[in-house]
Amino acid sequence: MNVSVFSCLTAICWFSLIVLLAAILRRRSNILTRLGLWPVTFLLIVGLLRLFFPVTLPATKVLHSTALLPVIQRILQRQAVFLPFTFGDCLLSIWIAGTVISLIRLVRDILCDRKSIQNCTHIEDTRIKELMDDVTGRKNCRYILTQQVSTPMMTGLCRPVFILPAYLIDFTDEETRLVLCHEWQHFYLHNNWYKL
Image 1 (cartoon, rainbow, N blue to C red):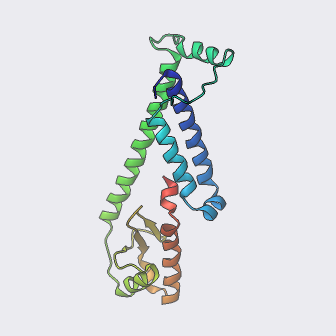
Image 2: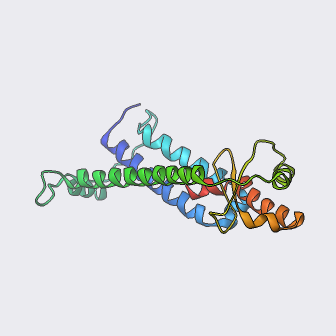
Image 3: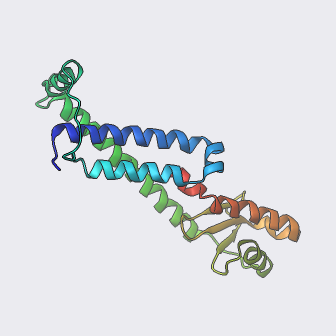
């Protein structure tokens, strides 16, 4: 097993293609409804493994290109205009910067959501708690009944938190149960994982 420029370049290309395919699959709700989260998860795990282990196995047959690969290598090794870097360095820097910016935005959004949830004024309602326990089959599901939201929503990747508008108190048991079932389906179908 050895690491070469070619294996690193191949790993980055495969990872980028796999992420692109996962993003396309994520937007196709009919595929996700039928197959679940596993195809996207599998693709991302394979992509990350390939990215972090860019090795060429001894039995790997490398197809040497005498036409295309040398041209690509010459372009990537060419000095960028007005910069002391090569085009390959510039492309790699842009790719890394895009990844870091995306991760920062994701973490920022998660922290903002968490802060918003913590700052909500909470209204207790035992009827809604009992209906929620009945719908979810769990005793540890948390809910926030507040006047600060206008529509029901669910957040949380592993531990769901239902954020419910205060007007839900006026709903009948059946109407409330339907709302809770709808929100529970978002958690059950891993919709928040898709949005990542």
